[in-house]
Length: 324
Image 1 (spheres, rainbow, N blue to C red):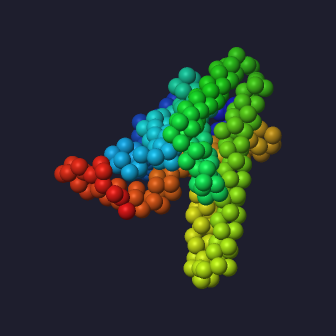
Image 2: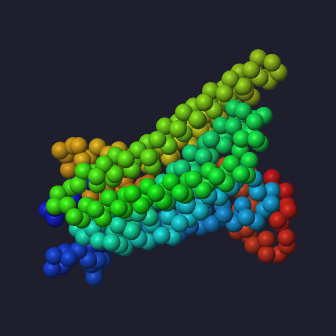
Image 3: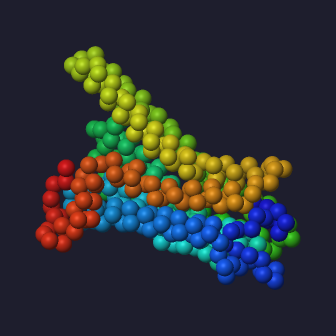
């Protein structure tokens, strides 16, 4: 993304220009306090929700299966977003990093890209797991065993780290350029989004479309045999609603930001920094929503959450309990 001049940048409500430096204001406005309070609450909810998922999967032996290990990996990535990316993004906003672009800003961006990419890839693997569970149930245990899932998780974190290193290296290389480097633009605005967003999105869309078609086919098959029409109709609506929720929330959170950073360098229009920052925080909020989308939909997770939040797990051993 091309660097912005001082006159082109909207001043962040929590920053001020002091002797050509961009620093946190000593007298924060109501807007600044409200903004940071909201973001802090967002971070707390993200950490708390994903920690619940992590503790639940670790504690209850019933949940020790390949599918939940993918959800565990997703929750670890999302809780790290809440612990690392949220505070760093609050301390080093996009506005301040446009001015300085120092090492801390590059570290912030690198962590953001790495953990967000890992979260996306985990979502992609979960969709693959659901594909075999719904479309090829007889082959599910063979295709999605502990070893395969372990390799998937390692690849997710490895690919995310490589993409992050590539973006960080491109950013460091751009410091030697008087103008925007071609490699910087390609990595930050084309290659990075292609590998970390567009490709996984296409894969997930294709997989969930296939799952939906198979589910509808099974429902119609049952309808023509023994099941009454209204019951099957409810099942179809439930399957459609679940897939629409999973894909819809993900795309709502991520698409605006990636479309903006992809096409902005090729447009003569200037996008205000406040808009870009808002879109960036929208993407991070997906880490808060993931526990609700991928865990709260399952009754056994809800049962585990209640036992943990109520403190009952400290009164007796529930590790072998059957969660309903």
